[in-house]
Amino acid sequence: MQKFPFDQIDDLYRDVIIRHHRASRSQPEVGDPDVEYDEYNPICGDRVVLQLRVVEGRIVEAGFKGEGCSITQASASMMTDALEGLTLEEAEDLADRFRLSLTGDGPPGSPTSGLGDLEALQAVRAFPVRIKCALLGWSALEQGIEEYRARPAA
Ligand code: ZN
Image (cartoon, rainbow, N blue to C red; front, side, top):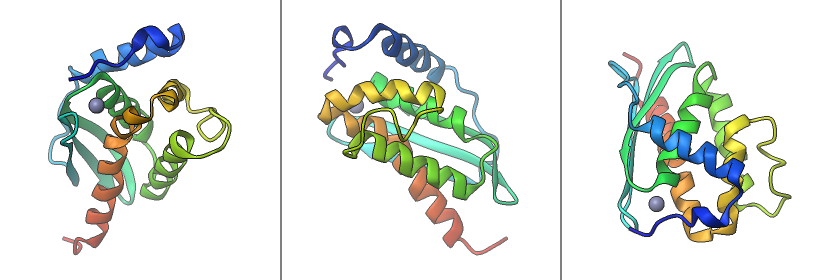
């Protein structure tokens, strides 16, 4: 597995990413999740299994299990931190803005400004092959929500 070139990015970003990568290893499991989506990137062997508990259209608990590179795991950890308390629509909006911040032509930082730790992932813009890693958990989120909505109400 190719290591992320940490020596080429800003110290502040590096610290945030490393902290989230560590935290991702000790994530508690979400009991009885309403959304569970397994997303895999065969190119670098990254995996994120996203779990959400949803009550009346709002995410009350978010977590994930995963393996793979530090960017994938750190991004998923930041994402689950940011998701708790959001409605599904707000979560989708956040995913759109985050995706745009990494792949869009706008100035770095603007779409995610005010989003705290997520801004650290702007550093990934300089390494296009790693953008997929940063977005893996977010794809699981978007597809998981879609699947949840398509499911008939219990
Ligand atoms: Zn990766």
